[in-house]
Image (cartoon, rainbow, N blue to C red; front, top):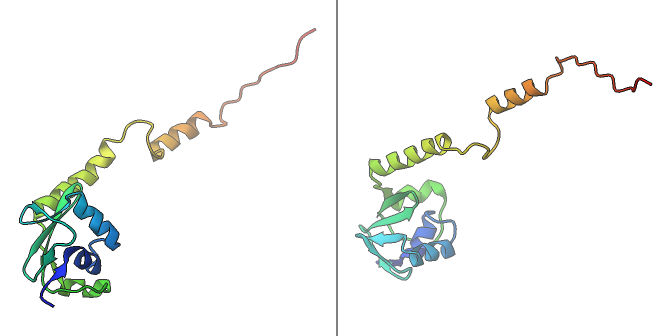
Length: 136
């Protein structure tokens, strides 16, 4: 086997969960070789470096061996080498951190602080003695 379709290889090496997702990524110009967008039918060979854009970063994989058959996760390192640059992982880390900092007020689940303020507000320590009976 000298060449394999890129969509089959990306599915077999578990870059994408299904082959149809791999094809869609190619159609949406998220898969490149040498900075050039490619079609799902593009044949790849050993030594090619494939860039896959999964926002917010671009992963790079070097083809070490070819296969069309899906494999277990343990075997994946024999077929590809992750050559993604460290600056891409920094972007991913910054994105994770900023996701918590930029949370808009009122969005998502309440924080511990929110819960404590709510408990303090609804606490039964206040003894108000209301007399709702009319004085006739």
